[in-house]
Amino acid sequence: MKLDLSNISKSYGNNKALTNFTASLEPGIYALLGPNGSGKSTLMNIITDNLKADSGIITYSENGGEPENILDMDVRFREKLGFMPQYPGMYSGFSIEKFLWYIAALKNVGSHLKGKERKKFIAERINEILVAVELDDVARRKIGALSGGMKQRLALAQAVLGDPSILILDEPTAGLDPKQRIAIRNYISKIAFNKIVIIATHVVSDVEFVAKDIIILKKGVIVDYAPPAQLTEKIYGKVWNVYTDKESADDYQNRFRVTNISRDDEKVVLRIISESKPDENAVAAQPSLEDYYLYVFGDEAASGNQ
Image (cartoon, rainbow, N blue to C red; front, top):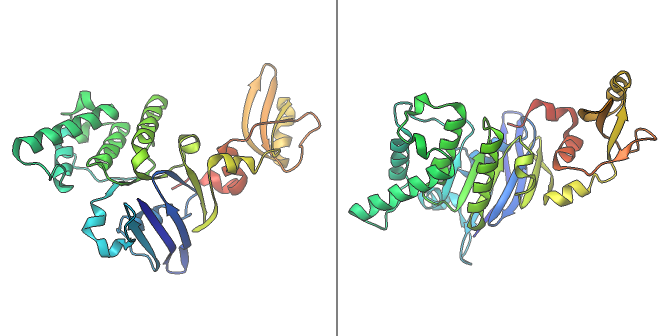
């Protein structure tokens, strides 16, 4: 299975949202990272055919077959997709269970079976997914009565229903508590072995240890595309811990890019990204993917990652 994106470009007036985006994706998890306006949502909407590209082509192939233009495949390609948008529209009067049965009908889940066998198959798939996203105990609750985190998990549930070959997830852990985030992250990792999974997220830690490759987007252009370990290796020797007092901390923040402030006994500990040693007593720290993200985007990172 392979999804090839070649020179995908899209503009909104004079604003270039994507410029010659090119990537070749095979089964595994790919993370899209970038601040507001980087082109992530535009790219996902083009792949799902909710938006037309100005130029470029996307092809799909499986089992060694000839690549096909996804626009020519039309419904055949859509049947392979699972999409979790950042702000999904769901019917507030439906129960969780009824909504997933509705989605199963739209996706034609279990079409290889008939009658009671098909109903049993769909019911089993829905129950498995509800257990995985920890919604099985509230399956009959109305969507309008759900918390934000529950709606988020339901959005993921509808995306994975039908066992799609390509799963596109926009901020899949937004609004979840740490326990739920870990559970969802592990679930995505579990089902990703035979799928192409594309995740756009601002929670860098969610993809640091599960992503096959990280695609860094800046103003619609790929600025880096590599496994997480290779990205963090690029800033080895540029991340430092500085132990100082409260009075001096402000001075460091004015002169350096400080990514974290914590306390260690009576000292203030600053995590600093700097090309050179910021202080003679600074201690080199092991870089993280978040450090690399902040190294690339600097102040832009503070604006979010939509």
